[in-house]
Amino acid sequence: MKKQQGFTLIELMIVIAILGILIAIALPAYQDYTIRTKNAECLNIAAAAKLAVAETAQDRGTLAGVTEALTGYQFAASSYCASITIANGGAITATTQATGATPPAVLTLRPTGGNGRLEWACSGTGRDSQLPAECRN
Image 1: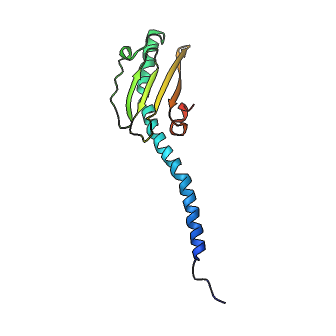
Image 2: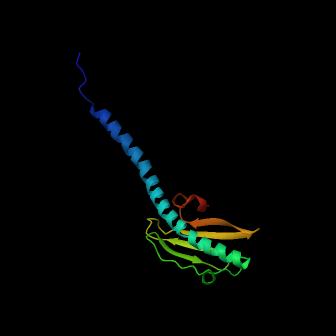
Image 3: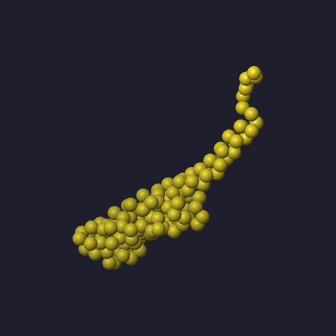
């Protein structure tokens, strides 16, 4: 009886087909993950703006009239964060850049106040799989 010395061509082709299927599934998931982490960096940078809004709202006793000029917040662009702006009422808009998402994600943080504290609600534009978990619709 003859001993088998290696794998047959069919066995090797099956292994390559299985690997191809796994790569076809994993690659888009990994791309979404890298975009999501870059978007999360912009959200983390917006934490300074959240602090500025919270301090100003605490000082004034209300969110009404809280603006970027009133908070004194200044932003310098980073690798993945193009702009962070504070609108009237304390709403923060963070726009991403160079993350690989088309179009770039825009994350909006809206404060609601009561009993001496602020609650933040986040929403974002773009694919849900590319947004940080707290900003998914």
